[in-house]
Amino acid sequence: MAASDRSLLALIEKEVLRCRAIAFRHFRSASLRVELKSDRSPVTIADRAIEERLRRVIERACPGERVVGEEFGSSGGDSTSYWTIDPIDGTRAFSRGLPSWGILVGRVERGLPTIGICDFPVIDVTVGVAPGVSAYERIGPRRQRLGPPRAVRSLGEAVLFHGGRRWWLKGRFAGGFDRLVSSCFLERAYGDCYGYLWALRGHVDAVVDYGVKVWDVAPLAALARATGRVLTDFSGRANFTGPETVMAHPALARLIVNTLTRTQSGH
Image (cartoon, rainbow, N blue to C red; front, top):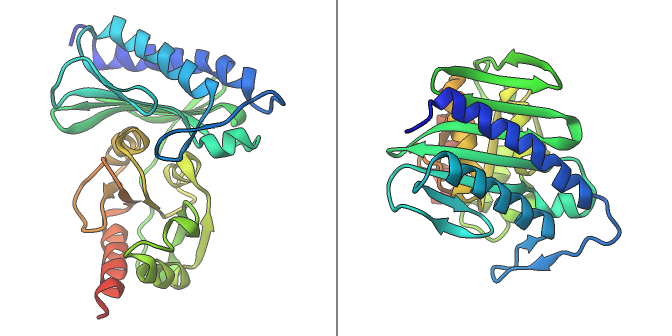
């Protein structure tokens, strides 16, 4: 790479923060229009404008490298090293004036997530990581290191966040999900990237998701790895491409996966 990972992280964080102005121009605006894409997911002018800006920045900093974004697909080289962009993770929340959306950028190098930036404009919080840079949370000018997860011995001790029950109702893990949430000390539906923020802060023990894509997950996978967590699919394999995700302490992730799949198979 022409630039170091540290300088790339600084560049991307700076540009993501500049994208807040684009988002806020439309956030809670009476004139905001929400369109439906071919997959029936929503998109706004803010989604497209932010992704276009971040693509230009990455293409200047890393000419020829592949970029995979939610709104404009894949461009650049075809390799195992690439960038991901989710310009507004949580467009539904954004379009209703809720604060839980974020701007996500990730980098995957030879199949391993290495750089992750997740910005939460409404609450003025950014989390990030890169090789040689410890995972951190920035609140305004103050930056602090993100710590490891606490050890949890049983689901009865665990605080679990998920993206909402509607995503599970028709899936093959519906029964397992019901068993999982009923077994936890506390479960809440905090969707999109917002739930992962509280896990990275250590207030939540696990996040489970269903229906996610690589641009939703790659930066979070880099942050999970750097803080002693794992991000897996429902078979327990490391996976940041979706459509299913568990982020937790390794032992708790195994317990969650076993609970989901055991219920599925009827054991």
